[in-house]
Structure formats: C-alpha cells, structure tokens
Amino acid sequence: MSALIVVDLQEDFINGSLAVKDANSIIQPIIKLLDLNWDCVIATKDWHPQNHTSFASNHQVAPFTELEFVNPDNGAETKLQTVWPDHCVQGTDGAKLDPDLEEKLDILLPPTTAKIVTKGSLKDREYYSCFRDCWKLDNTDLKDYLKGKGVTRVVLVGLAYDYCVLNSAVDASEFGFYTYVLKDYTRSVYPEKDGETDAKYKSSGVKLISFDELHSMGLDVPITNC
Ligand SMILES: [Zn+2]
Image 1 (spheres, protein in one colour):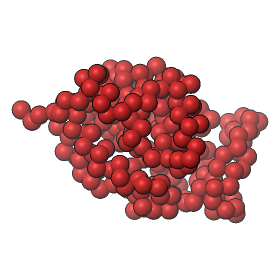
Image 2 (cartoon, rainbow, N blue to C red):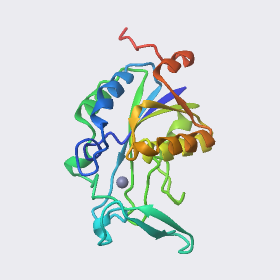
Image 3 (tube, rainbow, N blue to C red):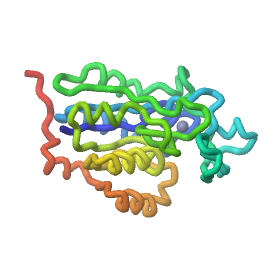
Image 4 (cartoon, protein in one colour):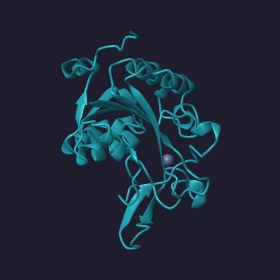
C-alpha cells in the first residue's frame, strides 16, 4: 500500500509571510500526482498558535535568527533552531491549503482515501516533521493512521525540501516505511544548500527519485472512474 504525503502546501509558504522561492511552480504538478493510484493521500498543515515559539516576533529578534531552544520535557538538552516570520497561524488565510489542492482532495475517487494532518499546535516546540515535534516527544496520529491502513511505502512532495519535507521523510524512514521524495515536486528555503540537504536524505535511507521512477513502483497509473 502506498501513500502520497503532500507537505505544507499552504498559502504562507506559497505567497505569504514565509513564501518559498518558486513554490507556485510545483502546485499544479502536485495536484496532477493525486490522479495516480495511491491508496492514501495525506496533506499536512503547519498549524501554529499566535504565541508559537518558532516565531521570531515572540523572541524580539529578527526572522531567520538562530536561537538556542531547550527540550520542553527535561529542560536540559538544547538545540540551535531558526526562528521564522509568523506563519500558518491557526484559522488565518495564511494557514489555508492551496485552494486547488483542497478542492482536489474533496473529489478524490475511491479507493484512494484522503486525510489532513496538522502539526505545530503545541506552542513550546518546533515541528518540522508531520509525524512529531523536533524533540520527538509529541506524535501526530499519522504514523498510526498509515500503519492501520497497511501502508508500507510513502512518497513525499511539497514544502520545503530542506525543512518539513526533510524531517518528515527522515521520520518516515525511521518508522520503517520505504520512503521516497520526488525532488522535482519540492522547493527549498535555501536551494543553495541542496547538496547538503540531499546528503541528509541519503544518510537516512530516503530515496530521491524522479517522476519516471514511479513507473517501476506501479504508481504511474491514473485512477479511472469505472
Ligand atoms: Zn511552522
């Protein structure tokens, strides 16, 4: 069983406060991918309260500054993490999925099932992965959902290649899914560092593939309405 995971195709990452360069160019190609014979399609949403700790505005520093964060559970372990412009605040227009994607999710044909997964609602920790927060303390329901459906293979696309797609794919691989990323269907916050980012995927057992390579997995067959 195979799942397509569309990561954070939300207004703030496309045209808004944290727009990823050239993000618009991947939207229609991703929507076309939903026509293939997936068993499940997952769309993830960054979904923060206004007082979220990943917002620079909550630390009185400039966006894109690196700050030291403390593990909210044990108060001991620390990590340097980037703080961002306010983005994807719950209930705002910036947090909405791209409208064409949203519409497509509503009309997916059986047997494909669709699910929206939100992440980032606990204010005291960063979440890049759609499976859990950066401290690996709080899990979304995605892993159990996919395992419950019998999914063994996941293919990820979306935004951004070097943050949420990366961390989601690394977790998927760690959780035992055969994990693939269609790199042409992603865009990076820092494309100039894609070489380093590629290496992080590869060292985690994630395969970077092209659309043509879906063929060998039998995933290039459009679903027909019959
Ligand atoms: Zn966020």
